[in-house]
Amino acid sequence: MRKNRLFIAAMAGVLLVSSCASKKDLENCQTENRELTANYQSTKEELAASKARVASLEEQLAQQKNNYARLQQSLDQSLSNANSNNINISKLVDQINESNQYIRHLVEVKSKSDSLNMVLTNNLTRSLSKEELKEVDVQVLKGVVYISLADNMLYKSGSYEINDRAEETLSKIAKIIIDYKDYDVLIEGNTDNVPVNNAAASMKNIRNNWDLSALRASSVVQYLQNRYGIEPKRLTAGGRGEYNPVATNDTELGRQRNRRTQIIITPKLDQFMDLIDEAPEDK
Image 1: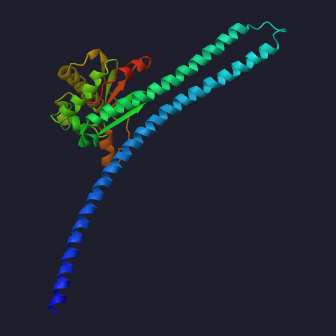
Image 2: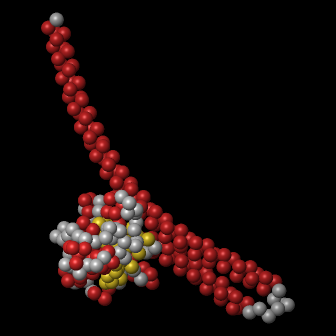
Image 3: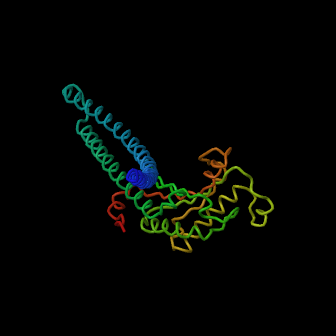
């Protein structure tokens, strides 16, 4: 009987240890699953942006191929009727050659554009922490970089003054802007549709959401110029008030998404090849 009791106690201990190990494994799996889900969502958004650029260039490529086919058909017809008309075949050949060159140019631009988009996205997202990425949305669409920052990352509550929390994030974005010196930068302020607090706003010369969005954009522009030495001729500040929402203003979550500042970095398309060659190495 005593042996049985000892055996039962030993088995209970084994089951308890096994249960603890299983719970820890489950928690590890859940944590890994959340990280994989977040990575999947980020990758899906980048893929959607790249697909949009690819679709645009493929449409242009298809149009040029159609033009090429029509010109080739005209040339064939001209050659078959050379004895009965005075069509300038030499000129037609030149047009076909120009069309071929443009098609090659489109293919090259598409390749360089996709590479540039990937370089920019990797540089931007790599420089931001996981916590920052929760409040920073980075997209590259048709060669233009859109960085959207939540208002509570940048400004003091109900104000256009830059807060202490913004310094680390803006320093990383400034590094990207400095590295890509041939880019123009538009800082665009956006608000929700809730009217500003008249009592507090009047002390800061804020009449409405137009003023608040424009002043916030101006604060970021001056911060980038004064703190990081970015050339002011590259910077533009603009406010769009409540009139460029990305979500409904009927919910608190929607209003929170609409209260944002966008940093729009625009490269010159004719400098794509140089920008690719000069892209900073991974650090």
